[in-house]
Image 1 (cartoon, rainbow, N blue to C red):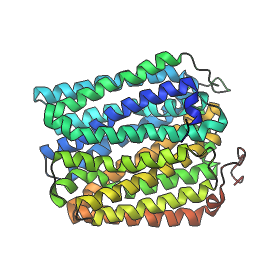
Image 2 (image 1 turned 30 degrees about the vertical axis):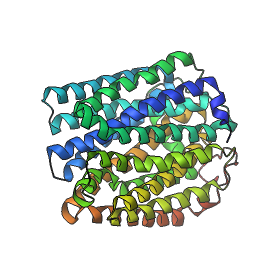
Image 3 (image 1 turned 120 degrees about the horizontal axis):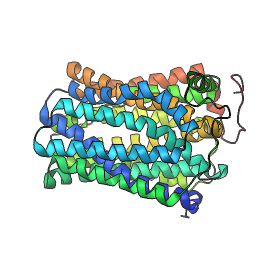
Amino acid sequence: MHIPPALKHRRFFYLWLGQLISVAGTQMQIWAIFWHIRTLTDQPIAIGGVGLARILPVIVFSLVSGAVADSYNRRTIIFITQSCAALLALILGLLTLSGHITLGYIYLLTALQAVVMAFDGPARAALIPNLVPKDDLANAFSLNSIAFDAGAVIGPAVTGFVIAAGGQASAYIINAISYVAVIIALVLIGDIPQKLQSRARGVSFGSIKEGVRFIVGKPIIFSSMILDFIATFFASANTLMPFVANDVLHVNVVAYGWLSAAQSVGATLAAIVISQVHQLRKQGALFLGAVFVFGLATVVFGAAASLGLAWIALAVTGAADAVSTIIRNTIRQLQTPDEMRGRMTSVNQIFFQGGPQLGELEAGAVAQVFGTPFAIISGGIGCIIGLGFILFKWPKIWNYNGDEPMLAGANAD
């Protein structure tokens, strides 16, 4: 084991540590909301409402937010978004504490938070290449994955204990406090040089169109986005976890918390392994193989009748997803110039958030009609079929190694 090279860059370390704390709070809130909805209704379709509330703002605002990230100071944008997210989490906690919370309020506040994060995502992802040199970028994204996944282990794992000890509202209030960690990190980082759009058009239709045209003209980027959407759309049925815990495995809220953390345990272990590898090779084959394992493990999870098998299957899906996420993020950032990274990330945001959020709606609807196990199993099969389609449509992605220069034009790869 050695200290990953990206952590030797002071400014990246501050942001990484702040994210680790903040993600733990965010993940606590996400899984607390799922449990909260289950206490308010026994209809699986209600879970789908959360996915819809999250994705609609992303679809509406993502393209604009990418142009904003390429036209204005990304550090300032993150200051604003983190402050707004903290306020919304606090409002959710106070409404719950006062006894005035309803499904409608949960959906509304979830949607408003999604608006905020639609602007946060492109600015944050585009900021990372400004904090580390090119050679350490893949390592930075593996550490980013560790921060997210470790936070996603801690958050869900303690969710059950927090709710049992302090009530539902306490999970939301703790999340509001956790955003302060990123704000402090941004203060410590100081000014960050970035290359703004070369043409002084700012946030305009032409600027947005330029970003979309860039992505469509880069098959290696575009195909990875399509596969990301397909895989997460069909295999996002883990959001049915409260119904799996209650109605299939018959476990309590504490066991639900540990089950919810399983994916992130697997993802953290995989990200730690990758962080020890200085340069990843055969990235295309690794990416596609990880998606296949992700779909297969989802099928096993859907068929599991015991807590142990379900936990292991979820951990494997998390590990596979971590490998996939690190590779596809590295591909996209290395193949995108700095002044275009915000817009590239904003389009990608529609795919990587649209897949799981619309997938939640699909999973809830299928579970409502055919039952929870069928929804999960059919989703895993759909993920594998989608992988076959991508490999058939863009076979050259299999040969992508990771050390290619920035590819130019639609026919470059």
